[in-house]
Length: 266
Image 1 (cartoon, rainbow, N blue to C red):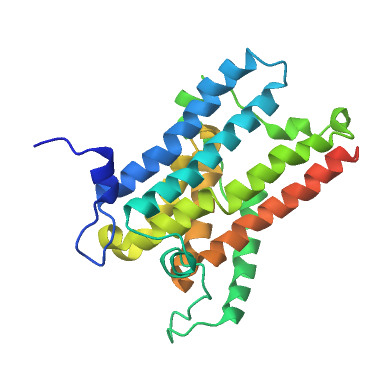
Image 2 (spheres, rainbow, N blue to C red):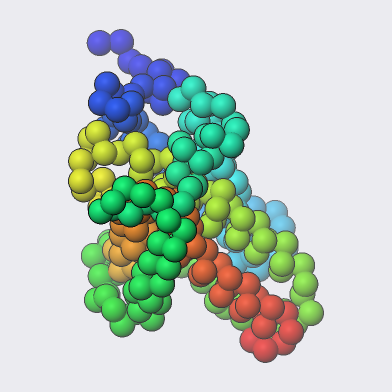
């Protein structure tokens, strides 16, 4: 059998509701995840040997490059799927529309209030109390990889460092809107039902968890659970706004922390 080209695989979809095939779903995951791992554990030390920056800043810049790549990957996928970049694509294909009542099938913006319990669940998981620590399951890998911890930047050494807002704004835009959420909830999730049926949201959460190759020490312990919290409401209410709001709140809290660091409150 002749090996398929990248374009033919990405453009392929099965006959069931124009859904993605299994190989296409996995390819999109690989194209989004592998560059993140490469940038973290190959790109970071390479750039770190050239510039005189703290390694955490170098890592942060590399991850931002990966997030920006996800945005362009999303555009490539949409284009190869035959979409035009217009309002209809954003609303209908990417499901940036009012949530739909799963019982009545009617749209209602008040359903956005359902983000509140999911935000609370997300906060519970963020504390580390809500889930057991499974980090040891990947210790055979993570023990040999550096652990980049951006929280070490929260010191008075960065008082007055307003330039920190530049990488943070890039992270905020391409992580919570044009990067992770765009490719996993807006592009992938609506096209996974043909292969995974009612469990498409669950598999989406797994893919999202294991996408975090740049932070392998959190994959089993937290990223998988976050993936479920983000994917389930988006699937249930047929709206990408659900996960974007839930995930995006984390970015707003991060912005407050960054401002605190800059003001010398670290």
